[in-house]
Image (cartoon, rainbow, N blue to C red):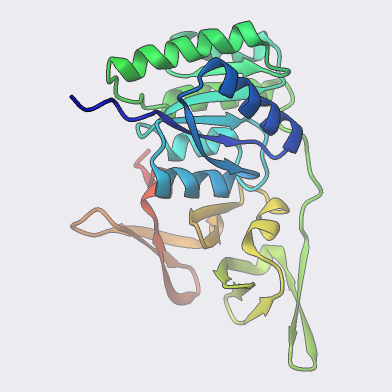
Length: 260
């Protein structure tokens, strides 16, 4: 009789110490749990979930690029989610429904033990990971009412060298950013250039409400989307305003285009 495979998890937190501490505590509380990826920002977490299909995702609510809430929405129904947060219990009343769990920072060993027990029971019962859309909406609303996420300095300008010329692009002109090996392609309605900065670094300075990650290598300005078209296989393609290029949406980000 074959043994059950060891459960697999990712940890996503942009701070090294909390991430390392949670890994250490999980090793003590749940020795058979395999941590298959550690991520420093939201887009990396979505990519890890998409590629590695973990059973569980431990997500910090505050992360650059995409928040833990946005990552949870992208992963909804595909893995069990545990949020880590520094907010007090009054800010996480939305978890009462039990669709996901949360850990307050600094994480207490007895509280982690409760979470581990719940996760063990769900996995042993082969419970389907829940749809988190409603939970995420309620929690997002509560956090916004209590001050939301800490503001970071927004990116306003992009400078790119083209030969002996330096081009300046206002971020509000950009239609999309596209990863191109060590560079990032910056595209406006009438021009484009490459910058010597990876997409994940650019993502940290973008307003996630204005710019949407739609693929591991593409971030698009939401207001620049003319329409999203779904084919017979369910694949989504974006058509842009004032630009002929079309952009593919990966499955991990298809939730952004659910009908209202």
